[in-house]
Length: 333
Image (cartoon, rainbow, N blue to C red; front, side):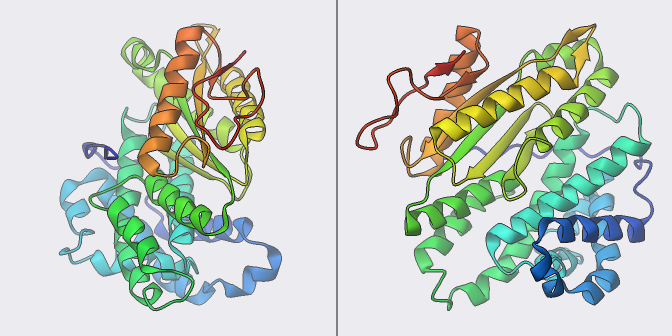
């Protein structure tokens, strides 16, 4: 069973820099275009996004600062249709693409907050991720219907997606379930990484405003070290999941090392660099279900932290596992 994060509280006041819905929609469009190969640019519904995108951005911003506005995005709310249109506005016709589009929107909104709101309230990143997950749930509900009759989306795959969405599931869970469905069909390996900042709670308590800025710098640093096709999603300010497609243990270990080094270079507390412990799980070596993979990544974080190393679950000293057996939380020094 996958635990779903509790709903983060709303803010007491609007966030500076999020009042221009047209500018936010334009920034989202540019982000979506940048993520596509040039040859696919003509598949973007530019007119529709220009006409309806600002309303979606405004709805997300409203839900960020008000529980009442958030309720309007739920299934029985009057803005449920606006949320449901997110996938179509982004030109996303697969569940994984819908998830990626909403993660792009979250990234755009967070970048606007970083530029204009020094010392953003603690918990803001979690609230934003939660709101985007609510929108993704509505959008995936719309995209699901035509997929049932598609020969490329069997019913058992859709069952996985619906099961992951049994509540306001974080976006990374949606993406992980889709990756599992695709891997089950073609046998391709992928890596799940959990980046967990060390001493994050102490940082929050000692310097809450400094913590917000430090977490933001860490998020930017990690984004700079993942490939465009990989999925990066925040579970919380100090916990970030990365799904790296077509990656084995050696590639995942190298990526985890780069991420850990980037975290240390990105932010400091009282002159000392922040550090992160990174746990790795590989499909199918460490499991074929989401629960097994997330548990292995968590175990890798604990193994790395207890051993005083950066990465847990990396390349084993004796080499790769044989016969696809679970390899355990080896640490990379």
